[in-house]
Image (cartoon, rainbow, N blue to C red; front, side):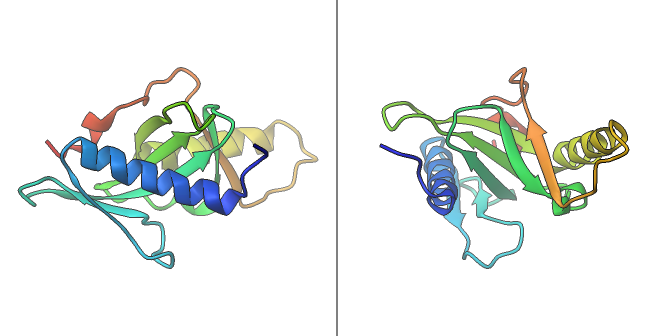
Length: 146
């Protein structure tokens, strides 16, 4: 099987995250495609706590994902990113669950460091998030839905 179109990778990531949340006993609803910065609304079974989730997926199974500049500024308290690492269809995806505030700080800091690394670099809207050490791997507890 060849490379999957990026739009389908994103859709797969959203459905995998919604399924994983459901498997863990939470209520997950995928939002409409035009909902800004929010892919999934999730709540605990009692509906006493709800959160929003932005999903980002890659298909190389790595620990790096591409974001845009908005990631630096959008960090509501109950907003999270779930970064999905897809590999082969036979393997279970890996999930990195990260508070939006962590993503905002990381993308802002590392982009500034990247720009400062070479005076010839031009600013762009592209940002990256990496979890090389796996600090956020399967950190579903951070969602606070229990």
